[in-house]
Structure formats: structure tokens, C-alpha cells
Picture (cartoon, rainbow, N blue to C red):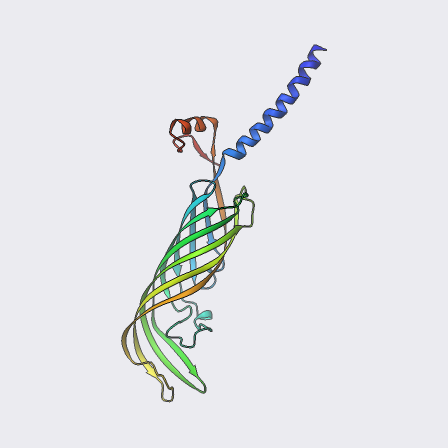
Length: 246
């Protein structure tokens, strides 16, 4: 009878201790690093690589490196009446982005993001055709340019934040400043009303843009044990020792 009483008392203790352990693990396990690619940009004109570092549950900082490549499939920008002013995917070059994210929802899945970007781009001996009725202006141009931008984004993680697989959608608005130095090598426009002049010129442009992206990748986690929590208290709440990746 005494042994049965001990078992009855001991079983709830075991269940309670396991529940607490599970809760502590949940509280102490945080996202640490997310590595992603943007699969929308990838087939269009940009090979990209994103790193996001989580400094807390609600805040992260990220950096992106990208290689920009010319793509003949989209080199004519259908919204541009003048292909020389707003060309399509004729550029080659390198780019980088830096972003800050604030996770505002209770589930830590939804975020607002502020992003800045820089691109150094160029093309060589590119043929353009501007159409005007039955006439056209064909011209050949080489160009070097740089681009600065700032974006305000909103996004959502479509997978649970506890998953090691990341699936993220984002969208927003941005502003761009582009400074271009180009040389028009030849211009054939016998009947075109506004032919492109031959020579070297500088063009500065400021324009709005719409951003949409879909990232996939992996997320690593960091876990604090009880010793780490104690050491954090001794260090004023900062991560000092005892980190391990999960």
C-alpha cells in the first residue's frame, strides 16, 4: 500500500516535470540564422544569397549578395516606350542589400522590413529598338551605372517558425536613384521622329518601384540551457557563454 501511494505521488511529479521541461525548451529555443534565395529573381536576372541574423525573437538584421546577369528573354521592358531610358534585363553586375525586420505578430511570423540596396551594373554594345508607328529607331549603346534604393516591405513566413525549412513571401514599395553614363555608338533612324543622338551622355533617374519576392531556405536555432540563463543574468541579460546550435 505504501509503495502504491509513492507511485501515485511520483507519476504526477514526472508528468509535471516533463511539461515544464518542454515549455522551457520552447522558451529557450530561438531562431539564430536563416539562409535563403529569392526564387522569383533567380530565373529573371539575379542570382542571390540572403543571410538573416536574429538578435531576438522580434528583431533581425540581414544582408544579401547578388550577381546580376543579362537575360534576353526579358531584355525588352514592355512598360517602357523608350528602351534606352528604361531598358529591361540587359544589365550585368553586382548588388547588395541590407535589411532590418521587426516581427510584430504573436506568432512571430509576420514582419515589417526596411531595406537599403546598392547595385553596380553595366552592359556593352547592346542593341535597342524603339518603335514609333511603322518606323523604328535602332541604336547600339554601352553603359556603366550605379543604383541606390530604399524599400518598405511587409512579409509572412508560410512555415511554422519552429521549422528548419523557411518559406517566406514579401512585398512592398521602393524608391530608386540611378546614375547612368552611356555612349551611343550608332543610331539608325531615317524616318524616326526622335532619333537617339550619337555620343557620350550622363542620365540621372529617380523612380518608384514595386517589390515582390518569395524566399526559400533553411533556419538554424540557438538554445540556452539553465547555466546559460544564469550566466546571462550575471552579464546583464546579454548572451555571454553557453550557446549551442540546434
